[in-house]
Image: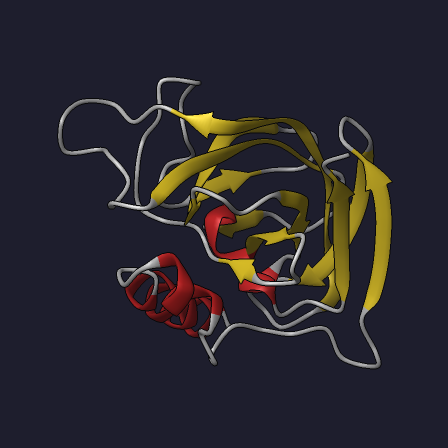
Length: 182
């Protein structure tokens, strides 16, 4: 299950290597279905999300997730960490806490998206920003452990980001959180 999620997430990141408009049209990105449970909250509020653990045990993986901050124009680290022409970086600081009985062993980046006021979604991009550290490629959390980091998105300069979305299992879990930027 984890290998599948990592493969799908890697494909999503590679698809994100185009421009932001191409990323928004990524057909491999998970979309909410009729069975998706969406929790809408404000920035700074925590949400408990469920997902499948490595053994395929649905609902055993439980994380409390919080978007603590959104940096609407984030600055990249160094000359090679700059957005493409016509784009800017947006960074969201996530805080993850394992509150379930299954260990979390995954890449938190793959389950995140931002949405603009026109309804377009943008996948994460590979970049580091001066706002703070990101997550390592794989995060491992035992019960009670906490980790925070920034996830970075490349969006058009004129796009107005209105929400941050997150789901476990590379975005394919039935629980989805949405933090409204305003």
